[in-house]
Amino acid sequence: MNLFSGKGVFGVVFMGLTLIAFLSGCGSVLQEQKKEEVAVSGSQGSKTVDPPNARYYDFDDIQIPNELTKNADKSKIFQTANLTAGVLVFEGNVEVDSLITFFKATMAKDNWQMKGFFRLPPKSAILFEKKNKRSIIMIEDATFSTRVDVWTIPVTNGQ
Image (cartoon, rainbow, N blue to C red; front, side, top):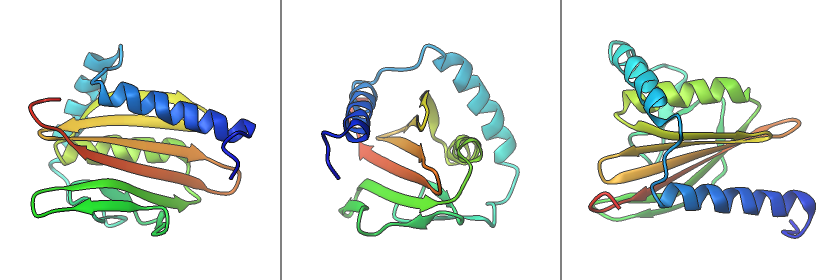
């Protein structure tokens, strides 16, 4: 992949800006509204059983739809006795809107709070936070497949 081609530069810039905003703790302008939506869906989600069409991978509190296949070559995980961090990469032919809805609902069920949402087709990013962790889910829509990158990092003292 040539990072200096049109698509590559856009991807690198978009991901860099998104990660900077996420790591600096910036919230969306609609943060309070989204927090209320997540709280409502979270309270409804807690009454249901885990969907049979999803499972957990290396992150034990982030569900992934079974329609997505893990790309082990692109996934990078760092584990110790106390934490798991890194990126899991998945691919599959799944509609972006259904993925966004899925992650908003299941992350709330696993006690994640949505902190922001960016959508600039063909890419979308959803930012989540919970005690001692932050996660960003990047969704990229391509012609014949969809790529999902799930980043998770530990945080200390709310930083």
